[in-house]
Length: 330
Image (tube, rainbow, N blue to C red; front, side, top):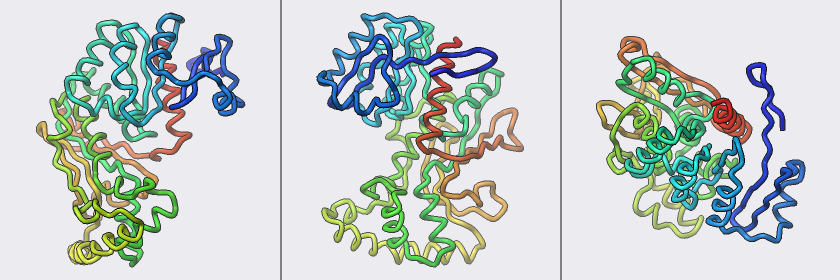
């Protein structure tokens, strides 16, 4: 496929792809009009070690490895890929939110081999948060603090709690039916996803933080975690209604709003529910928006605020294409 950027035409050809079960290789390029069918009918079973070894042996110019998984199975191969001078582009948060030693090693290999490692789509897809932090640092600035709303699910839940009159449990179940949560909504209530995102931003700003050091307000109680059936899940969610009803009343009494805030300052980070007043820049954020506030030496009195549409498959795809083109241009 052709992309026109900065008065230049870039042609991107997909020559290999793999699912968890099947693999396709085609030196002429895979037909993207029916790639799903081609992958489904492929006789080749996926062996990721063989896939990566073959990619390295081919040694194609301007090749890029794209990891679109959301687990950890591909991450152990990142060092090998970068050490073979093949750039990596990924929306997978798990490498950069893994042990600090791995994050540092991958970036060191990238710089030493002059091979790109781009992960713009890991945080606040649709708003260029990582690019802006990198730009500030290149200009001699120092990031002092970062705040952000990174969970569309929690944005929706807390907005509905404040303004709809519905109970917390009903809002969660409604969001589940609308497909706004993970299949298991408890995964959206742990705060882990937001913690990984603030960790990546903090590390990019120079922090030496581990994920385990982030203070996370996990909304999943022990009893809720033990729920085995949908009926048990609903029952345990209902047990949380009183707490959130009281929290809502206290918040309204102080003329404030609830948000699920991820923040970083002084080499420490947290994810928790906080109250903000009506003049706070995060007060009017909808479920489908993301927002980040950055304070630095240059932006100390008035923070740099980045706001925009958050997430979605099409937005993520555009960010990945942008990162791919960055690797080719460089």
